[in-house]
Amino acid sequence: MQRQRGFTAIELMAVVVIVAILAALAAPSMRDMLMRNRISIVSADIARDLTTARSTAIQRGVRVAMCASASPYTSCTGTNWASGWIMYTDLNSDGSYTAAADGALLRVHESLPDGFTVTVTPTAGNTVITFRPSGPADVARTFRTCASGFVGRDTAVATTGRVSTV
Image (cartoon, rainbow, N blue to C red; front, side, top):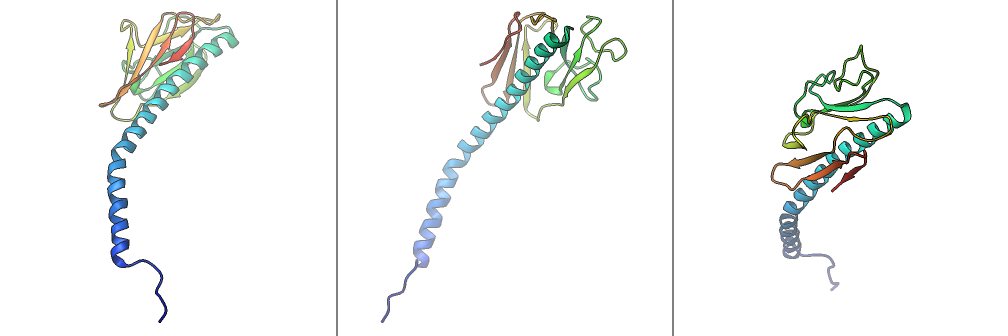
């Protein structure tokens, strides 16, 4: 009589149970990793736009600003950076975007996903940051990106205009 090859139903069930236990243990870690990656992505978006604003100010020889803006992203009426922001050339140096008085609207970043917050320090005048044609920022600022229940990331802008992420 020939020997049968393969797995028995009991062996297959044991493997399925082991895989299910391992998946249950890995799921919370995976969720945390995904959320930390999302925080990093949002923080990188802020850093990228700040760096782009500075380099555009240097290249064009004009003041370039970023401000908190809410939908439809056509003015600096926003008070919360998590609602979105715009980048624009500030030709009249007043710190707010006016399509007729200022140049082009350079970039729009829509609102962040639910549960994300962006806190800017210092809090006074924290809705606008401007880069001068030579590269420095009007004031040093720190943008802290957080999500509910997770440690956030800081994006700092020095008065020299240098952008760094911690």
